[in-house]
Image 1 (tube, rainbow, N blue to C red):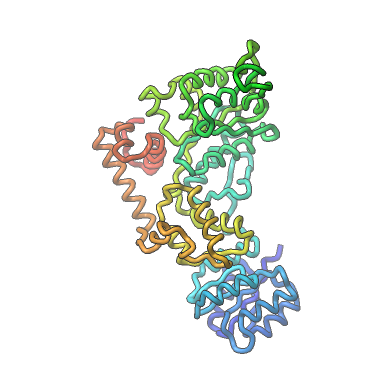
Image 2: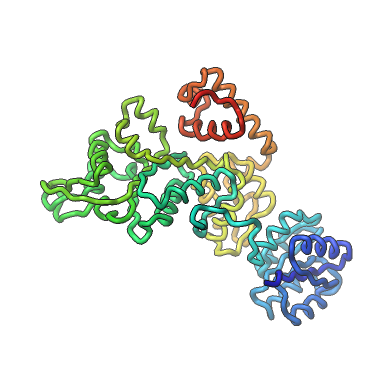
Length: 444
């Protein structure tokens, strides 16, 4: 297959040469034009995959060249670059169909990302997963932590094993459950989701197991419960820690052999639904406190997958933001470099859910196709003024903090987690990484 052919338009010979040599080194074919008129001639000759043009040139400007190119080549990706970055020009450029707007001196990595995205070439090889599985559309896993998580999920998905998914609120536990179901042998069956925290305790039993007509006041008809609906498929029990002790006992039975009873029925029914459960609380600690059944905990926790918080996978922040903006703006909006800096520096206590909401707000407030810092919530905008330590420095600080706390608490995992203000499960996840790096973290 022939490489994408990129048309480079710039009246500066040095700039043309720079972009020419760089893009050729990355495997692209190039053709050069010194002005807008020549660029339009080359476009008419055909076989151009993308155009990169300077904005301020003698004769036709880059913006005018963009407009005229759009009249004959409606789907041609166009990237504008200029030494005189002007937000008004940027807004006009996006309105007229530019894929991006970069300021000189050009960040070549950013340029390459834009060109690869516009031409449909992947910036990196696809993530290798078990059985040649691929990540579903809309799933972001740029960070090593998320790549490792989905590799584990791909190995686990084909089995019928119960899975406990842990992680803070908003990290994407439900998304992981959806992926596991999609990769399982039950993918053709139903995926039934139940948020145990969103349903009143008095109704949750009926929601899960169903009831017979007349079983209680208001039970005017028979109801099929979620476990029965999930037969031959998967049931996802979110916020499992919110379930009452009495209901935990009934859940223990159905997860053991699949048998259950509808409320008001003397007859037992059976389901073979696979159970995926999730919690943002430390279930081991709740077991220790007597607030969660130990036998149920071990029944659910055949395999545990921990979804790390967004602040620990910063490589995913900007790709996720771009994904959400594309969703809400239908692909027409972009964010400025200043916005990108704000997003990267913010700590995201609400995780992916908070990021999604912030991007939806930004699209609504922008009123154009360029998202600026003033379109962000104040707390996120203010984060852009704070320096972000290098990633290596951040990792080293975390390592030293964890190792010091471990030694202070004589390698007791529970006490160390309390001292650090994180869940025991999150600590175990971090300790596994430290052990792989060769650090002494004490006995398993």
